[in-house]
Image 1: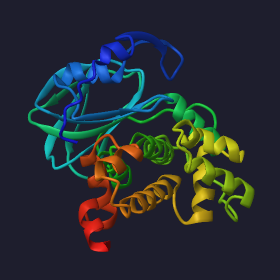
Image 2: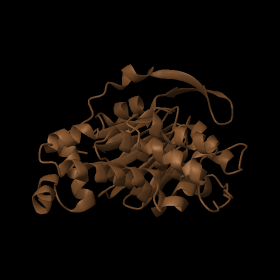
Image 3: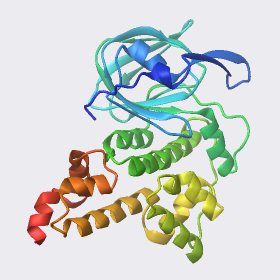
Length: 316
């Protein structure tokens, strides 16, 4: 998480587009990554984008005294090891709060305000497309107009904990990390709908999990070497369920979320390969899709308490 992101955000998407605001009126809006880089005057420590839209970014920035222009996506953020006063001005309106553990700040898409923060802040941000909120609301049987509330240092330990986990669970494995972010985004959208829009989703509980044939197909996909096969959208489509209900039914059937099931499966693969002394740790890391031997070793140790080399010596 300490390695700076070297992405040139302006190459990923236009710096400015025109999108409708939540009430349907046109609003000039910025791409969130571009706008945040501009006002924070730094690149994120880490940023991961979802192919279906949105992103999660981790920043460590200094004082801020600037206007944040309207953005295309909602921005939901929480803070790590930070205690800092926040002030947000919109015309004559002033909102204030304290950036600290267990609180969230929400900037709805299309809104603009001047921010004043006098010191450094360690923050995790979710850039959430409004379409994702609409999709999750529809899956919950709560369609219609969705207005996300503005928040400034608002107590919400549940949302804060989910956002912090986005910064903590980065395994350096694209397939695992993408599946985790997809699950997390849906969980966060669900939480936002119930806690920050006034809507109360009424999800129907999953009874009995997935059918044997659907579960078998889902596990076949999770075991596949193709990243496309293990996307949450593909897994859910096969089951005939929404992404949210698929995750619930899969966990009911296996005791694990799809992401945790895949992490455990990859660990079993790693252990089987490490038992063969002909396979170097670097070879195992590459075969399982890790970005580096260091990333693989960190993920392995997180699950077992040992490095791959220590585990190999112990069982040999």
